[in-house]
Length: 253
Ligand SMILES: [Zn+2]
Ligand SMILES: [Zn+2]
Ligand SMILES: [Zn+2]
Ligand SMILES: [Zn+2]
Figure (tube, rainbow, N blue to C red):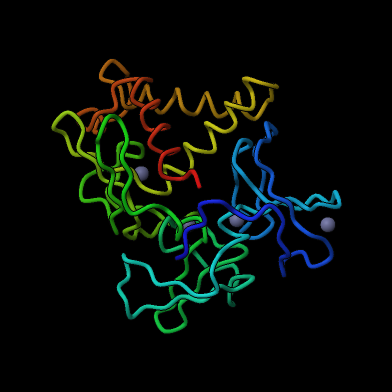
C-alpha cells in the first residue's frame, strides 16, 4: 500500500461525487462515523469532509485507499479488491482482522472470501512505543489478550470463536497481546474521553464506567473475575494509559 506522508488538501471521491472533499487537519469535534467504511474515527483525527458543507466524512485511509491490496499477514498470493460495500450476504460480512461487521467500504478477496476494513488493512505491522518497545501485528494472540482476557477473538454478535489479529509486545520481560478489536474499543473510549474533556457528553460517562468495571475485574483486589489478566500486566489505570498510547501509535495516520 502506498504511504501518503502528506495527504492532498482536496480530493474527489466516488463515494461523494457531488462535491470536493477537503482535508480537515485540526478538528476538536466529537468522534465521527466514516461514511466510507461506517467505522468510527477520533475527533482529533485527520479526515476528509465535504467542502460544500454536507455531513459527509471519510477516514484519510478510506479516502486514499488503493483499489487493490496484498497484506503481509495473508501472503503474496491473496489479493483484495476495494468494494464500495460488502458483497452479499451483506449482513454476514465480518472483518477478518478485528471480527467486527463490515458495513461499508471493504477490502474483499473473492478467492478466499476474506474481508478487511480499510482501517484494519492499514494498521502498521510494527510500531515503536515507550522508549524503544516494539509492537508487532500478528495474525492471532498466542496468550490471553490484556483487555478481554481471551486468546481467541469473537465475531461481533456471535458465539463462535475465531482467531483475530492482535498486537504483541514485550514489556518488563512480559509478553502481552492486545486484540485489534479490543484496541478499537479502547480507542473509541479515549476519543470520547478527549471530547468530554473539552466539551462534555453523556455517552462518555458510560464508557468510563465500562472501563472502570474492566479494571476492577482485572485487579487483584477486585472481588469478581478470575484475575487472569493480572499477570499480563493490567495493574491499574496507568497500564490502560499505556495501551491508549499504544493505540494512538498504531492507528494514527
Ligand atoms: Zn473509513
Ligand atoms: Zn457534499
Ligand atoms: Zn476490522
Ligand atoms: Zn481482546
